[in-house]
Image 1 (cartoon, rainbow, N blue to C red):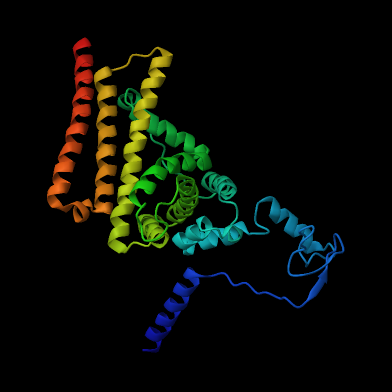
Image 2: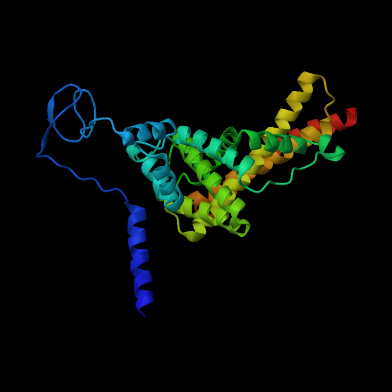
Length: 339
């Protein structure tokens, strides 16, 4: 019974810490003199030159602090930000995009520094992953770009994660834009959301590389992050998280198809018009219907328009999309006749 009470108390304190871990103390009585400009002031920082009040003589600790600052582990500690991001991911991201910038190490800088650290871990400490061999079938398929990108991102993990995150900005904005928290968040905010999510994914990758069965933590903890960030319940967070990553997958495949076509066109390579164009059309419309369906579920227009109003408007929308789809298929069919 005592253990149950203690666990409940621990969970209550942990939840309170997740919601608001930052404690600020204000001393409005003590007058200090700035060591830099010799101005008398009250507070933590000099209002004239900005130097902190506790600057004193240089010690061995000062030397150690300077080395830490090179890697962003000094003021506004990167390690503290990573700790916050791991244990209260959605709340930490919410704090940052809500204006609490001083509680976080700069996200983009943190991603590149941590990406370098992750690369060193992969090369020297973590178990080596088996490389994917490029077979003849893959060499003649657009899928080769995925494996080429994977090989490149293993060497440039920070840039690779950033590119992957860029594909999730628009889906996250569409799928979560009517959330209880951060309603209609902007695309620039979406950029920083994905940067911090990429750092979280790298940390989860390190954990799963060291303890393989903990790979299950990745989808669970990403769902927790979206739940804390946007304020939906468990079911709403689960299906929207899955929808975001599916949309990112469809979008990245569409981009790869476009990139493959452009690359062949500029290099003088042979374009398989049926296969290349058909694959692009397929995934583009899959992405379009996917995002439109999620938006309809979010807005629930049948409540405002009634079922009949919602149905006839949906039929018109489907007819317009179907018209453009038929035109796309017509051009693909024309290409087939030329082959």
